[in-house]
Amino acid sequence: MTIIVHDSISKAIDSLPFILFQTICMFGCLLLYFKMLRTTTNPKRRRFIYWGLGILSGIALTLLTEKLFYWANLFIMH
Image 1 (cartoon, rainbow, N blue to C red):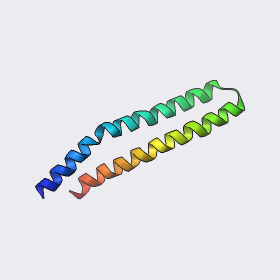
Image 2 (cartoon, rainbow, N blue to C red):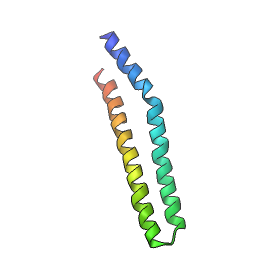
Image 3 (spheres, one colour):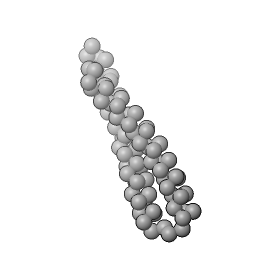
């Protein structure tokens, strides 16, 4: 039992840099999104920014959420 818990905790700690990187990417996408939308007046470019950065931040958020749920489940179950 102790070995399983130790392995689970070490796996969670090993994935921590990945989680931090995804968090930074997600917030970076959102900041860039709002900054570009505020400064762009061209409607075609606005649409591209809306969809492009929206999809990128959605992918980052999906991956981040999956890791965070895995991490939370790890500590709840053990």
